[in-house]
Structures are given as structure tokens and as C-alpha cells.
Length: 171
Image (cartoon, rainbow, N blue to C red):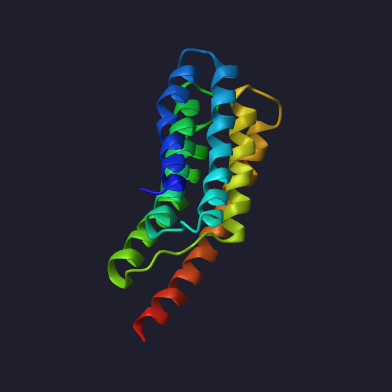
């Protein structure tokens, strides 16, 4: 297994302690650990490219771990009353659509779509929103709502790119 994929897995392993710290009220510790986990998202990509270890597994694993991290924290924030249920559902719907689309693309065309700019922008806003929400800084919900809107834009972009990729694999 590549070094970059091990870094991605370490981000996934941080999910349980972050959720635990949030539930037990140690929000600043959860914030710091979340920041570390998000830093690994930058590092794994840099390492993969620097070591020429960009793999199909890494292309699939990285967004999966990101979604698991964000959704776990958002579920917990909803459970403790920091965000409304509708916001969680609104965030979850495009994530489920993206996951299903990625799975279909992989199964039917043996292709994995790489990251795209709208998706990266939505992920950044989601990161920012969660960071604010973890420590209850003002504006966290508003940033989350903007992230949700941008996630729908990114989903449309990924669907269009996925259709083009699937068509190119038919030939």
C-alpha cells in the first residue's frame, strides 16, 4: 500500500476520536483533531504526486474518507442540536448521489473520476463550516448552508463529467 493511501487511512481513523470528543463536550480537542485530519487531505495528494503513487485506490479512497469524516461530524452536530436535521439531509443527498455515481462508473466502465474544482471548493467550504460549528463560532451555519449549495453545483458538474467519461470509455 502506498504512503499516500496510508495517510488517507489515518484520516479515516481520526473519525471516531473526533466524534467522541465532540459528544463528550471537548470541542476544542475535536477541532484540533479535525484540523489535523483535514491537513492529511492536503498531504496525501502531495505525497501521491511527489512519489508518483497516484493510484485508482487512492482516487476512490480519498473522497470516500472525506465524506465519512464530514458526514460523521455533521450527524453528531445534528444529534447534539447544533444544526437542523434538514441541513444534514440537504448535505447528505448530493453526497449519496456522488457515491452512487462513482460506484456505477467504476462498476460499468472501470473508471474513477478525479477531483474537480467545484468539488474541491465545496469541500473547502464544508471544512470551514465544520471548523466553525465544532467550536460554535458565529457564522458556522451560514457557511454550512453555502457549502450545501455549492455541493449541489459540484454534484451537477461531477454528473456531467462522469457522463462524458463513461461515454469515452464506451469507444
